[in-house]
Image (cartoon, rainbow, N blue to C red; front, side):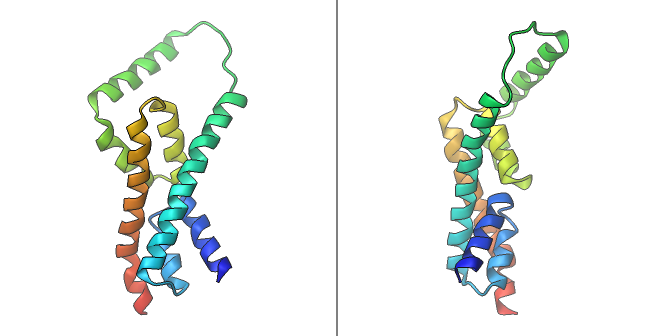
Length: 141
């Protein structure tokens, strides 16, 4: 039983939408599958969010060099994108990729915006619920 729960948590840490299929195939009910998947997704996001910070601080040491024209052009594109597209429309589409990549993007570009962290947790919970609704017919097979 513990291994089944642990495996669903591990899968939901990476891909939240497809983890309920594994939970229903293991024989869990709708509520149990949602709780396990949502906890795994939120835990995976939080661990990835703070681990990304560790990686960016230790492994990618910023060297004080001159900013090139190409780096300046890239920074301008990022600023323009952040100004033209509201965060509440951009962040909910991120779990389609994967939870660790979502955490990396949120940590890198929206580090000082605290509501984005809460919105991200809400988004991964919503994707867990959507996955549970999408894959709930599996429990009746």
